[in-house]
Image (cartoon, rainbow, N blue to C red):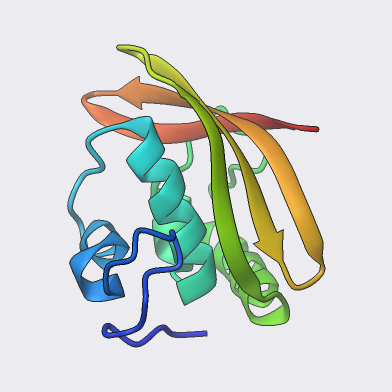
Length: 132
């Protein structure tokens, strides 16, 4: 599902999408892992599969060099799911590694995860996560 630029940003910031996570989806670098995590949630809600692929660490278990098939899979998930809210429980900042614990509210239920992010060449990437 494509998101209107004037819609409320799915990350819960209270800003319009065009003034919030869309900036990252269009190429701005997330300044920290928390911002990256929020922008990734918004990317799922907005159907921005390319951003998900671009911000996933190569050591992630779901990483695929077949980006076309990977994007198709992400797009299918985005279309099948409703993204209804994001709650950040904690953020553990680090210089090269950081953790964000959150609850993603979806139409099918809640996803609870502690995500790990790693900084590579000045860019934060999603490495992996543990569900709880």
